[in-house]
Amino acid sequence: MDLELSKADVAFRDGLREVFLGAVPEDIRRRTALGETTREDIVTSQRILNENGLAVPHWPQEWGGRGWTPTQSHLYSSELQRNSVPQPLAFNVSMVGPIIAEFGNEEQKRQFLPATANLDIWWSQGFSEPEAGSDLAGLRTTARRDGDHYVLNGQKTWTTLGQYGDWMFVLARTDPDAPRKQQGLSFLLLDLTTPGIERRPIKLIDGSAEVNEFFFDDVRIPLENLVGEENKGWSYAKFLLGNERNGIAQVGTGQRIYADLAAASADIPTEDGPLADDPQFRTSLHTAKTALLALEATQLRVTAASENGKASPVSSLLKMEGTQALQELIKLRMRAAGSDGMLLDTEAEVVASEAAAVAATQYLNQRKLSIFGGSNEIQRGVIAKTILGL
Image (tube, rainbow, N blue to C red):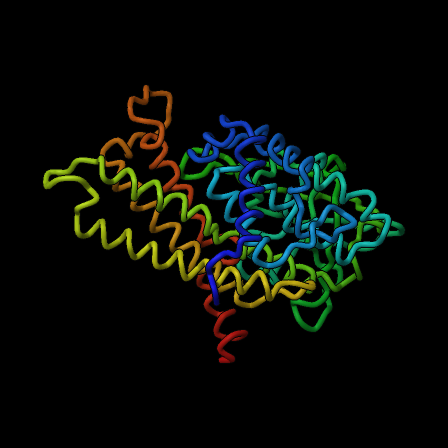
């Protein structure tokens, strides 16, 4: 694979940078680089991107897509991450939006797609349950038909940013007697103002509460909020998860962290000289760079293979290796921060630099990368079955 960009691709990349660096406010990009993006930052930046035709470039063209080549799509994702622009909300643009565009009816497309692209609706993901996370097909939440509604009962958990959600896309069991657990699941759209819903925050090890659990007690969902066919939800979920795992790799974010570390380590003193001269640190940094180069090539392959609604099984490999590489870089950033990196942003006064002060918080928070979106242990099983044929 030729990783050198053509003149046309360079011009395309430079055009993206004009928007990312010129239209998105610098304070938003600074907070994003520090891992402190706010809800308002996400909404503001996505609406700026949507205004410039850059919020949902991978959607069908009649709904805001751009018809880009796989290389252009790759450049878009990488440049967003490298320039610390908040990612368009993944639940909207990479998950439910493509599902509705591909499998929804015309009324659903008209009702939801423009609002989803502009973040007028904040979507939440209703997939994981206390006993069905990586093994999603084992979910127990049920949706029973009752007249012109489904009646939803059960629980969803680890709902990232669910405290902001306006609507939720829910995977629920509509046929409890199906012969296989992957069968009998349906993909439903739920207005979160519907009676019978309780949401509770879950406090995490880094002190934040970015995930939530939802409880459903006889929640009524109109039949017209079924996406696609009843009991075909597992097929839609697999398509969605392929997009999610590709995005979780965050290769561009890893490249930005690597560049920051390589530059900063020359000015970080140790007992034996600059940190950049430490053999162990230098070896770890170069190992990370090699991994990022391999991941970039793999991401191009996955992007090409995922066209026309076909999820690539290589997305599991990309998710697994990408999250591991990013966690290693974040670990190196903790080492570079030294004792200042142990400072947590609590009520106590923080005297370290901004980057050092958030190092520990980010390190703790990013332990999640190898768990959500299908744990890396589960991805190894997927790779063994779908790629290696074991």
